[in-house]
Image (cartoon, rainbow, N blue to C red):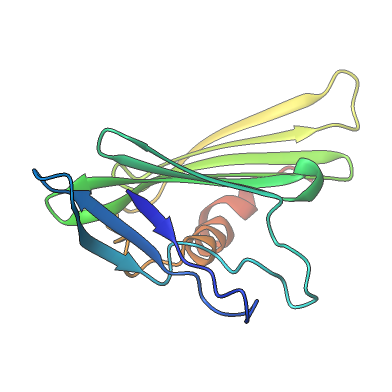
Length: 164
């Protein structure tokens, strides 16, 4: 079971995510806690950062899906249980702006980066696909700010591959 705690009295407070495991007797035991797995709910101006948030559990995978207002952007990321603990397996970011969109997926456990840049100002739209590599890294559930990590990797590996 996954729970996200929200302080309704303080919109700027962190939102801890708790992982609970079910015991044989159907009770639950707290397994993991992260104060970093969920991003801030509100921006500095008091508006919700993400229009839609969902968390699903599929076998050993915990999938988090966040979408911005008007669905101009989204972040999806997946944690998987490994020998190192619960670690970030992959993250995908989609952004759409005036005339272009960018979609990239980071595979942390293999070091692969897939990027699709779409120029929407051309008829027909033109996709530029790029496959890159980054170092294989382990990012734990308890210690990783996913948004910051995605931004850092984008700036280091992807931004130089976007067409002019």
